[in-house]
Length: 158
Image 1 (cartoon, rainbow, N blue to C red):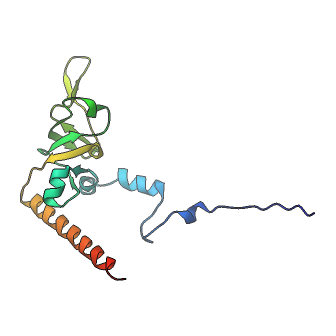
Image 2 (cartoon, rainbow, N blue to C red):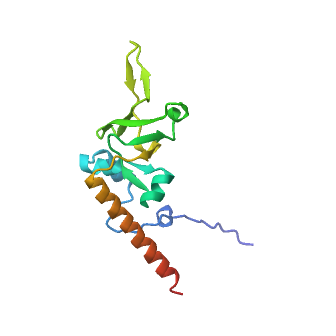
């Protein structure tokens, strides 16, 4: 009887699927890009999901958040409060935060201050539509329709 030991090595990097050679998967580089992003890039990073009604109406899943949108807090400690919805008062791109009309707390001095909330914890329930935003909605819906048509065409290939 010969005793030998089998050593099995797992290469963890091989199990991660990477689709683009030009985009990094490095946590360090992605965090640097996220937190060092300029204001124009942060606008897109600060997108929030649309409510099911708006999603059905515009055929768009999410939009960059802006002042005067109406939102609901759906995640976090503030989502349990009865006043967890309201109009967006301010969008602070530098701190990745949004201030909402009735989501406030009192300081020790008694003065009310807005509680900063990250846009990923919000759902947009009413959009403030202007010309540029209407154009963006049309572009996003057209791209989504194009992708669904292409997927449907590929399903019939076999």
